[in-house]
Image (cartoon, rainbow, N blue to C red):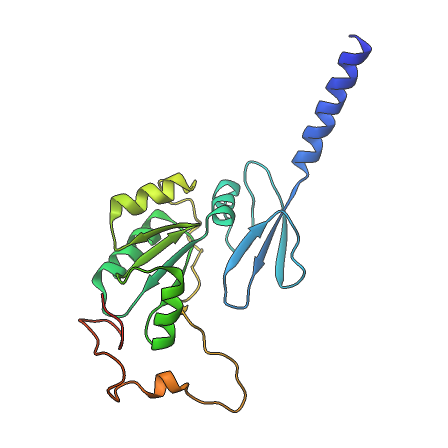
Length: 204
């Protein structure tokens, strides 16, 4: 073997070895959202894992390919109470084994937070990375998830559970303040009436 060829082969093997030792970091934020990254976070609940054909974690055992999809295109479901399409969408995500976070629309603050995400008024809303799907459509949701790299069938362990739903606009930790003026004004005639099962001030 020529010296140049031998050197190139050595560099290639060293590159492969370095790639095999790459690290994947899993961090859980204060809101329960799990994030995967190859860059170690500054703080938080972190689990360090080696990448490869699959990763194993005592908490979720999420395969590497699925973890990468979660990292690159996190899934969020925006829903409301007594919303049958929301229930159908949640069921689809669960049955397909999609790790997702859920944000509920109940208050005027939630509606305001929702408006920052989309100009649409229809629930549920599914976000897959930057992609947004308004209203429940099995075909549209399935296409968006597949395009983002999520598997067609569940690869999650039976013990995996998604985080509990949280409000779209979590209550601000403002000392000395109780309910916000917007929340207190509900039902005083300043807020438009709800349509169907929508929260006050929100229309489907």
